[in-house]
Image (cartoon, rainbow, N blue to C red; front, side, top):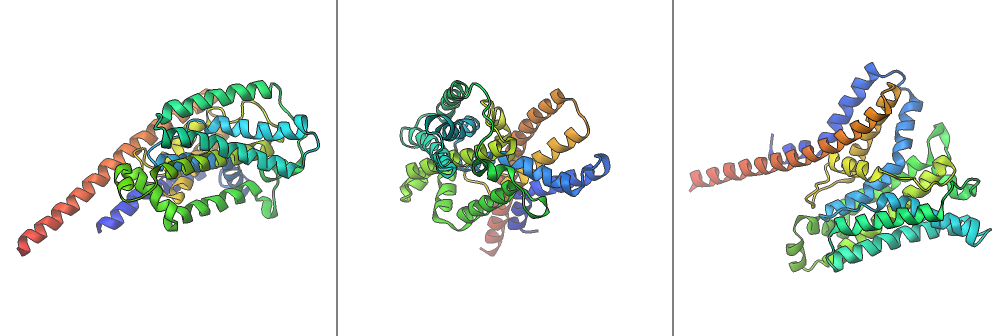
Length: 334
């Protein structure tokens, strides 16, 4: 087995884990393999999925974004307040545009401070997380119901075979990210910046722009997640998204996105998301105590960190062995 194949198996390890989890749950979890349940796993993973995409782009640059869970609540809060309180009767389409715009502005703001002013990403995004959550509590003290159907359409409607539109939207964006990372100039720049930001700058890549765009996309995806979440529950609450940033982080890292930057694939992100979805669904169906479910999520984050560390170590050893082998071959020929 050559080096390329070994690295490919290592990078796609999450799919082996997912397959094993599905097989195990078919035998031990009642009703797990039913069509409705499998569809529900994907549906309930859609909101987290967009957070995973946003977090992953930031992680690939060698940074991260803690503010996405608050952006998820704050961006739709602004859009809905425009429609219901500040400009009653406003077209819901404009409300959606406002929501997406707010998400992008938050992401751009984070990216500007982190990419251009070199502010520590932990301190920057943590402060924004707290600020936005506080503002959301202030603006939406009580849940808001009876929202326009157009606004809740993406998150609440289903089409043929009971397939949620939210799932289709997620798949479309995963494909877009796949194309960007594998074929787009920006995707190559993104990976290069995460791999070695100094070398990328020297080679002519606008590293500030790459980071700012990554955070802008992160804010956009968080806003989309907010719209889907509102549609799923047909209301907006000020606690939406609380704690989800850590699961987004876990899914991204388990899916092969390196915390060190420079490594990540859209398919890996999807794999990490589905693994978390399957585990969460299985624990619920088995009637596991809610506090143990919460503890399990913490364990998954810990496992994600171990996986990232182990994969980096194994990758380095494989590459080192291959280089030693090539050196020995050259020495013999000489």
